[in-house]
Length: 464
Image (cartoon, rainbow, N blue to C red; front, top):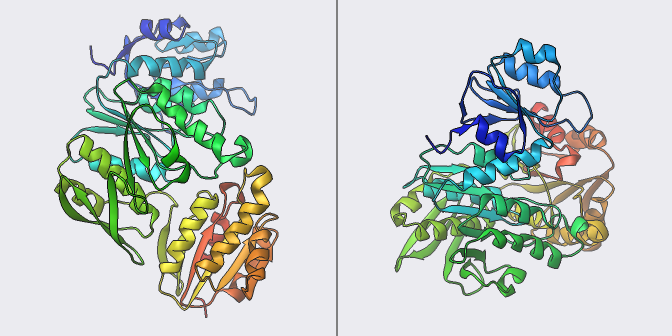
């Protein structure tokens, strides 16, 4: 039997469930929790909607689309059971706990390197970079998108195919204890921590608590496991780690250092040493943060014996994903979309990218950064200082918190600032603010819905 094929009896036992309907299938290899993505042969993971609506309709939809079974907390009616008697139905007390147990079981079947990644910023990009590096030599599995929470990580592991040779598991959190839970499911053999910043500081109370939360990833490591850390991060560089530690950095002397860094409008270059030979690394994305991300990928690639030249090639062909520093020319301006999310560290990195763009004016449209608690005014004002440091010409803020960015920038001498309470107010005035040949950065927390601003700019036509 293949490792990715699990019998319904095994599922019943591991999940402490009950087979309500045996169905026609004996083994399952693909699991899915989204009826929009369901494929023929999948077993549907029925997670109760937070809204409290009846989720049995999604089970029926999954069955109609070809799912051969489901894992559910619902008491299905006899009518549904009889109608879909060829489908396997397994009832459990808690679907999320069930898939976590199932993922932990599946992980135990694989004797392969597993890289666990966490960090305040950069973990998704780092995961993607590690993925392109390792895929030069191995069949590699990794999280889709940002499937990095208590549901996404188990589903990631349940997607592993029988013949994968290495796996990468990104782990996110916003409370203490979350990464502890994830790492004990994924059991990484190598842990990578990109940095400790201010994301979720309002929920965790301090950067020291964020460090504590990130270090929970070590709980899943074996005794001979290895930790890879960004040595330029002030808290990580001083953290006591009992495992073998490999460091990379730019400023601080590390086991692997990047030097001769050149940041251009659409690319970044640097030099690093691999196996006692220097190599120039080219990344088709702009920003110093990409140097740290790629250094982490190169270190892990070296650990797993990927040839240096293949790693250089992988970095050169790397494709940035999502709305993370996406630069495009439209309507006589250069637009920098980075509205996926925002915290102080990621806004600082985005402003540094804006600073590198060749344009008549540098315009930053910034919105509220959320989940900062008692630090919200201080960190927004710190962004105002970054506006000045990066020589931004025009600042537009949206939201009750982002006004502190403008206040600080104004205090430090910036003349052109605009403060709006809502996206609608901002959009109405953009045609009077933005001019042709501007470079425009769009950045805010996801809850601010800055895609509305980006779309309005794209639809505006040429600026004068």
